[in-house]
Image (tube, rainbow, N blue to C red):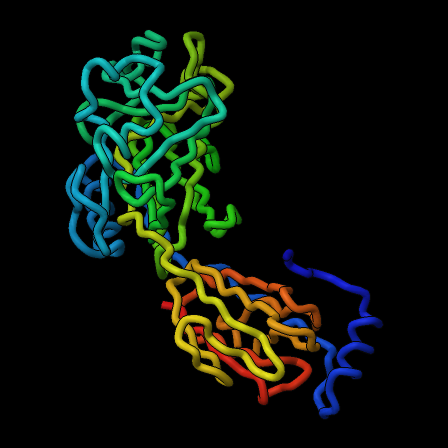
Length: 360
């Protein structure tokens, strides 16, 4: 059994006309494209005092309390990483464990990089390059973080202390020494690895300052973030643009993010002759289901018969329509990121076949 995405238009039209004698056209008109998920951006540039004030605003927007390291998964709140509690054996080396903050100190974050490793440093990276020892300020004394051999690091979220993928409502980071506009960004990705947002850290004009940037979405829909810190990785011969070099060298301090939460069960809807029926609760015409934002709805045809799934809402509560399909076992799926109520019907049978999905 596999999804049917496209089929020759003429054969679909003939099959639909043969299957039903009703006034509805089987031609499926695409709905307006749904808008990208909305998010609030938080940013500031300055010393540790101004950074702390903006971080407090960001924490309030995430909602809930700070969940302590190693505390079990929660329904809300946030997690924070400031690097300063990393043990000495894992500090000032290029082999910081990628899963430390989901295994040793459980906070639901797993790292990866296209480089060669990760480093938590207590020397302002003077141990990497003596010329950089006075380059970076820090927000929480005194350890800082960087990927090794790359200027990018990904953070994948997990239900704390488990291998279950998690999704967060928002993520933000403190950066040290952002000189060039656009050199430092955080990209946000959903569970399908589709980019749903990007924010850029503010830069300064050469002074030794800190930057904070983050985003908070309407619901926990972020499965991964990609952080690009500066133009290039730090090396033993790196020179920052403020010291006559060609690249903007940037490192990271505190991370703050929403509690990673499991997506929950998807919605399953049966498509029959002539009905939509919720597999979860049996409601039919309309089939009514409730899911968490970021989750999937799948419709499955249970018999031969020409039907489609047609979004009938108004933006932002719309999704991509299916084509008319008529094979038993055919499936169609959409992922819904924006909270709201999504109504739909069959383009062949209209309101005689209907349903709605409540996204929370």
